[in-house]
Length: 209
Image (cartoon, rainbow, N blue to C red; front, top):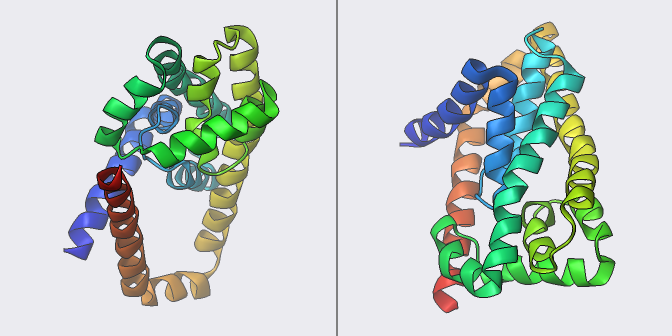
């Protein structure tokens, strides 16, 4: 069961990036930025691993990811602009987005104003939802996209760089290969438990609401 679940998760991300190239990276990051729980912490490190193999260029991979963030953010922005909080709460539960995430993004935007889009894109969790309050506030699109790109690019670059460095070590170090291989079962259990807890936590929060 563990191998099957991990296989499905890994196959989707790896398949889209491997077959779609830079467009695949942009597509997956667009999904993540549309408030759908597909972590960039999985997407960009794998893109970085392919940088280590010579398949991708690090800067282009980061740029593709940042462009995807801009494209996906349009969805969350328009939901906020056209439907506001009631629309987000009505449909958000279908992608496990609850009031807690929306509240956090609202508070962050209220504190920093338009700059929240730039700062928020550099922060876990907040980055995926910050476009929504920007839409509610009807932030002008030009600065919205500029800040989204400028905040997303370092995030994408950093994650891809980590994946690239790990890939370099993986390919060069037999000891690291052996260590990862011996820990496969433990890593698999931890990953599945984390995914299960994440989904359970989100569902429980939505039911309480």
